[in-house]
Image (cartoon, rainbow, N blue to C red):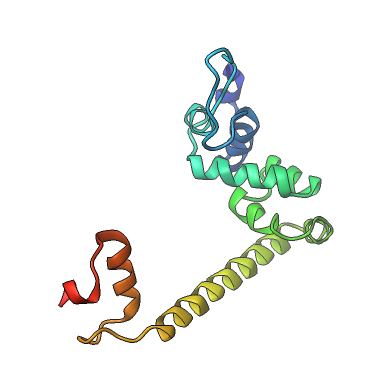
Length: 159
């Protein structure tokens, strides 16, 4: 059970997410055994601490893949969970170096990582678009793939 004092403290959303990630002892999709009464899912931990499940998942990424300095920065409220989760994708020595430079450097690194990921997604979308011929009516072929996946439609049935 979450301590009543926890609700009285003034914690940021990121700090509450870190607590929820530590409370959750079941991984995503893992079933609780009927005997195990202490099982806490990420969703129930998120509900207890009034944060989103995705935020708890990001906090778990920080706890599992983050350098101790990065985890401490989130727990102290200096950095958000989302920025820390992005930085946690780097190697631990890189993380420690970034954290040592301060909060502004952490936020800048997270911004650069997000920007690089967005650029990779754009390149992949362009590659997919260029690899497939356009439909007879000029629509991009990516839509054809989407229609085929979700509605079972093909170019013949869409015309």
